[in-house]
Image: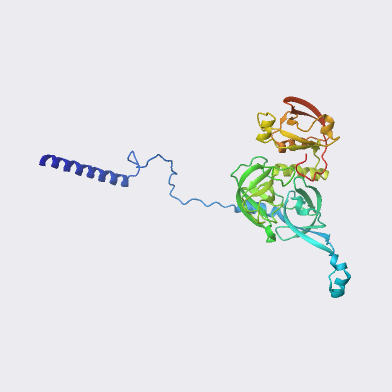
Length: 387
């Protein structure tokens, strides 16, 4: 019995010595042993021996800031006269001390803009310069210039201004449709009138629509801080190139909540060129009111998917009415271009030149039909829901 106990004690001591030797070897040469004690195998960044680099966007900001301007507008409004001012008894007590409540007043507004050409064209938002009597822009060096409106497009909320000045620092446009969710962006503008400000964030989403902001919506969503006064300013990428025009924020308080929207440069460039060339934007129109196809609507119409747009209304004697389109039809394609939803239908028809004949593929009573409609010029639309 004594011999067995002695053998057991020697075995335990040998294990302890072996464990200690292995521990010492792992401390001296980490990774030499075929196991590391972890429950799973992980991939780890190799140790470089140097401190991580700190990213800076100073070069991008320095490149694009001179191209962003502050815009100051003013307009004259006539205030409504209080009926009490015409009451004889009221005037008997207050007499000449009453103010003249009917005199014209001037209302000021502020925003931002982007210099897009060296000879003085500036891109901004329609709502920044809407109905303005006077427009002034302030360059990044403090120079103030008078500006005039070349044209506006309320349905995309874009406007083009012109100043009589040469050799301006025009911004560089990024290539359209190359942005990705997660790309870093800078928002540059004049928030709350405090002066030119640069904020940083990422592209949170692309192709945002159905927001009820404008008729034509295809926004870049970003968490870069955008506040009142940033409207019309630049959204630039990490190289300082223009990727969008800041236009709106989602906010319950009026301040930034991390959800801002910018018009992509592909749309801004197209609208800008039409305004400069023609003074406005001409779009196609067929006179229909459309509705999204929900899963419930798709089930009631026995549709296989929610693709397409439901014709909810027809303008009497309009192009669609003359072509034989009826309420309840499901519009599936325009000239072989599939219709995904009401927004894509709006864009497809708007892109057609007035006077052209388009072929519409639609579903009526479980039967597909092909109808031809003559495109007309789109009139100003007060409601975004109307095509």
